[in-house]
Amino acid sequence: MGQHLPSRDQPTRRRILDVACSLFLKQGYHGTSMRQIADHAQLAVSGIYNHFPSKETLFETVLLEHHPIQEILPMLQQDPKVDLPTFIQMVADRLLRAFQRRPQFLTLMVIEAVEFQMRHIGELYSSLLPGALQTFEQIVARTPNLRPIPTIMLIRTLAGLFVSYFITDIIQIPKILPDYRQDAMTHFIDIYLRGILRGD
Image 1 (tube, one colour):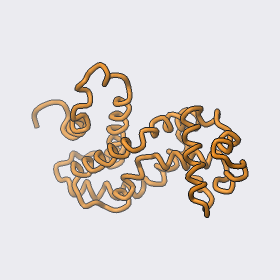
Image 2 (cartoon, rainbow, N blue to C red):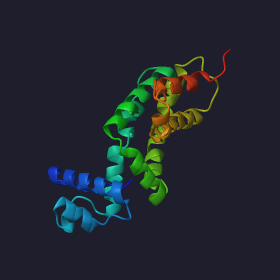
Image 3 (cartoon, rainbow, N blue to C red):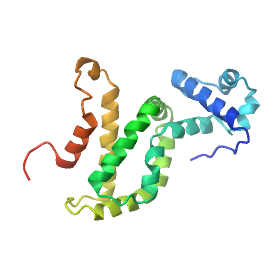
Image 4 (cartoon, helix red, strand yellow):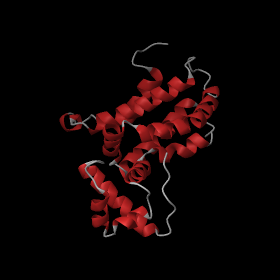
């Protein structure tokens, strides 16, 4: 992942990020110019380059700031000493809070998918995967009733669980079915852990 330049002027950097985020959400990445960002932030274009070496680095920083991975990164970097069901519930709680604070994330992810083919997110996940695998293996070791599923598949299906939850939450079905959100995450986790059929 690209790194932005160190900033001695945090308020200016914050203004640049807020303006850039607003314009990226409205116009997309390629539809937004550094000149537009500078004008809206009331800066010279060179003022932006004092903080970010390129427009792509600026977008990448905006994307990562809004990514809910920031909420669960401490759990991935340090084993939380719990079993898998407890860990999933902890991740779910943090992700729900993150999306409530940063609802723009899904739109930014669409821009990332369409205009960058998920390059930045792919690089981020690749850098985090070795540590996440180690953490998951420790969690799996504390979950004796778990079926013998490869750890990488547990990570992938767990990511799929949360992606499907948030994607289905933003479409129009909630307006049609008033109970659509009733304890939704609880049901998602229950189905993930126990399936949909009764029995052993």
